[in-house]
Image (cartoon, rainbow, N blue to C red; front, side, top):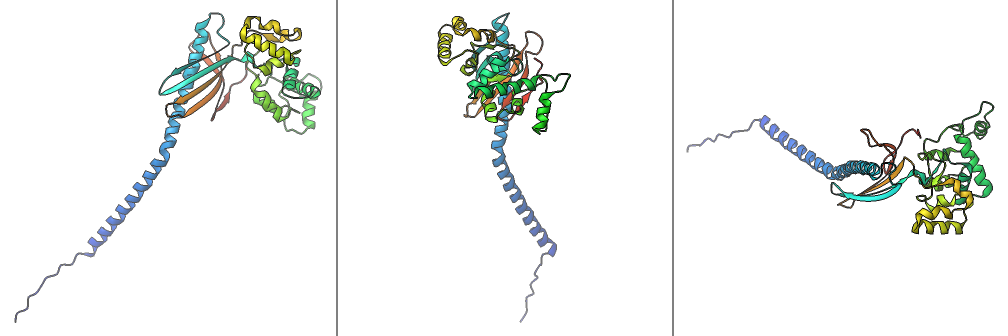
Length: 304
């Protein structure tokens, strides 16, 4: 009986190790691919939002340029003190409203009766309105050569800072003025500015709260004025009491407050409120004095 011999080949150990290593690498790559896929899914909306923000900023800039152009082209002497328009660009609808800063009370140039009237309109008691106005005037007034009583009062109150002794650079600084309640400051901010440069307010554009701040205004006089302003603006000033005449004006200021609402086709909206100073000539159509949106708060040094 003859035996048949069989040859059995055995794979080297190194080949098995390589196979295992390849499997581990493939597994690691699959994990990395999964992680990257999750990253892309999670970051894609963020990139899309960032892209929309960039587009919105460019569209707001376009709206400001159109506003400056309208100011230049409407009249060779003076552009409109207020207005609105809309346009469509880059898959978005843009609505623009602009108004002269003279429609607000300037913290740096407003006379005392106008500031007192504003605080009274916003609910302050007469004696408190007088006090608050004195504090505002003390903040913006340069110290005299003698003893500075205003600065001494701030030291006594241990506030950790001194009154500016100069112009308000921004309306938010009103919150630093001694004795003013923050709740009152918040109510006052929509009606004040530092970019008008005028002692009077434009009563044709001013909101009712600003008109009500004029000396001698009563509720009945205010209502009558608002009706006259709507139906016959050219005769509206005659409805003001004599005490209010010197604080009222029909003229605008150089600076404009522009509100821009950008609505993309996907429903996303962006809003901005910008104060600009249009130029009549030169390469630059305007200068940005203040820019506020959901992510940005910027203002320049007040030189008006």
